[in-house]
Image (tube, rainbow, N blue to C red; front, top):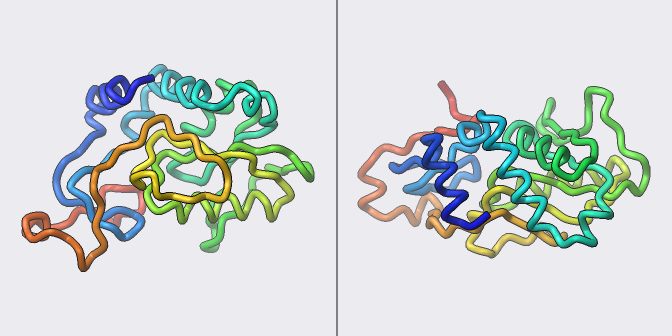
Length: 194
């Protein structure tokens, strides 16, 4: 899929928002991608997942034994990428603040895993998920995401294959431009307080 095709999917589902947003990473942005909205349509989610799978080198696709995603954001896209690759898809979650496998999910020692996220900005959640997978015995051989918002700067410690990379600027709290700071920040993501 091209960048424009992916953005068309986001626009069609009203998932590309503009305003002043406080991201889960703590950074600020004038743009927000609401992946839950773009993934709520199963056909759209499937198309995007197939696009991610096709971004992976053919040799790598053959090695992947499991797909594991961090809950909540990576859950749907991880499941769909697992379907596209024909492997089981599981997720890690944070019941006590640290990612772990639960719900009867298990990894055989040395299982080759693709970690799949929805959006990567700083990579913190992705690195935490990778650590949890490795602590459980898996070998993360690559990571993938719908969107790389890091401007190509993220280092996950494994090869990283985003469907597209977007360079919407993000700002640390002390770097927010005056025009953006003039508008109250909204926390639109899953970690937002009601």
